[in-house]
Image (tube, rainbow, N blue to C red; front, side, top):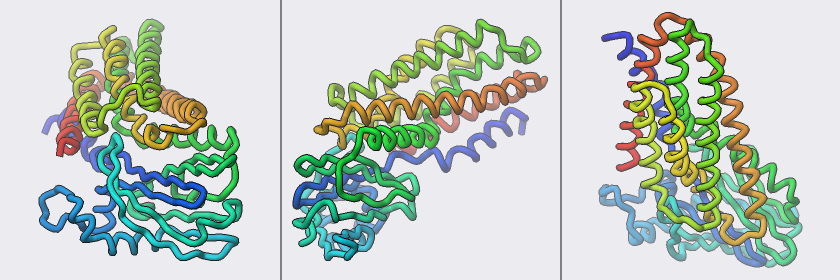
Length: 359
């Protein structure tokens, strides 16, 4: 096997298992005396085998037949407390809702404690965290004069009563933006496919990158940033509505397309490609926000925090990786072995993810 093929296979082995992951989110809506959980039917399948006829399709009938089992799992991992005392909690499957990611089962959670003082209530959420640490539960509390908005994650699994301050909302969604970018390997690999051709060109000059190439990398990253920020805003404010499944497929294939184009050499085409596909990547970023923020006054603040978190993480990753690649670019084999091997690896990963997401 050639050295290029070895590099491609190594990249595929290292990245494919982790990055095939797509967003797993649930939504909690807490009113004055009501509590509703919307959870993806495919996340429920991960908790319990619902596909009784093994046809890779989940029907309402299959959900209803497994309602008792699923209700017990929800009751085990959602604990409602009032004044420090655990309250009885029941879960009833009442219907289906539709989000950009697909169909969600709607559960009405019932408890006598829901009628108690909201300031002394708290909800402990533990669904899916053990099997998927990237799972997130986005919640909105709608109590008169006490709106609260936030995200539950491993290590931050409790909702308590009270009003969310602007700083809390901003910090919470800023943090989620950072996590979303760092764990979004498809977004990072797309950027890599755009930037690597400039480093290959610098390798022809003893590994020293010129100011003109630095400017082009800056414009590529800026084009990607502006484009995904624009579509993120449009999707979050429901100006644009596109199902998540085709968006995720297109994002996967965008990596291979960018890598293939980069084989022709660095140029302004990378800048235009970053802008065009950046619009798609913004729709992917928005998938976790649109449902929760549809009717909240804190939409703009949460969106700003989330987007700034993405941008900071993107900048930090570039600052960490570029110096390493520049040093590597001084290696004689960078241009002949590492770059073409990486490009082929990116195309292989792109096809694998695209086919997985089509399924």
